[in-house]
Image (cartoon, rainbow, N blue to C red; front, side, top):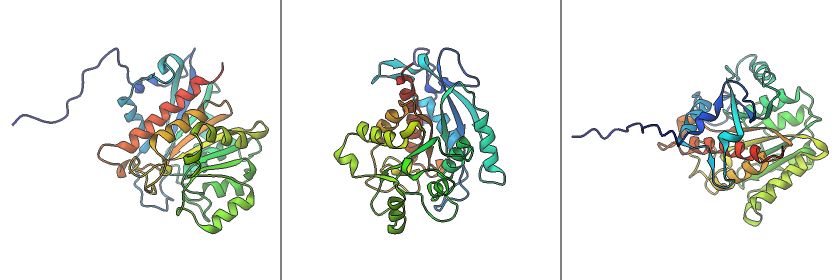
Length: 308
């Protein structure tokens, strides 16, 4: 019986993969984007493995090209991703300090930093580090089914932790909130604090670009820098089985991809993360990891749209 195993395709020099965008140093003449893995998992309220999701996302870039039909550009001509590797044990003792040191080491040439989680605890680590404990210059956009305002310290609490530490709720916009995925006390608390809520239902009434613009105006008001958290459990479970808390009826892959490209095109956005993905729980076709890799490319496509 013939061997029906997979055979690696021959390299085609006219079809460079998106993995070729990864570099060890900034590239002169291109827009440089930093990439850092923050593979948090230990405080998750859902069952989660310790597998390195950032490594899986990097590997998945090999499946895609650098050409954007929508913008008629080759990303390889415009952008470079400077890979700073992964932070060791971000959940452990001294983990926040290690994240802070890694982000402090990012070149000033970087127009934006991409953080690959891990669970949503990565958002607290990264934004806290970037703000250096002073949040007066920062706003936050979350694309998430959940408020992440829970008590305690977990992947369900990063927004509450950031608010407790001084992030202004009037510059926090939470997009994609789902029915039956949050509690009444936490929802009331968010609204009373002045957080802007844009629920899942908005995507049935408005185009994605207008939602992104509205979020950017609030989070980036008064000239603030904007941190964007893309929690993949906002997605419909059919496209993100590797997100433990994703539910049926979430956003489509296309809606998320469009939102990411739109926000990344704003010069106010200085960092974006992709969280709540567990490579071990993904489907056999790796659809969640593949979507995350595409979101990295959508981010780069947004950056190359920025005015010089």
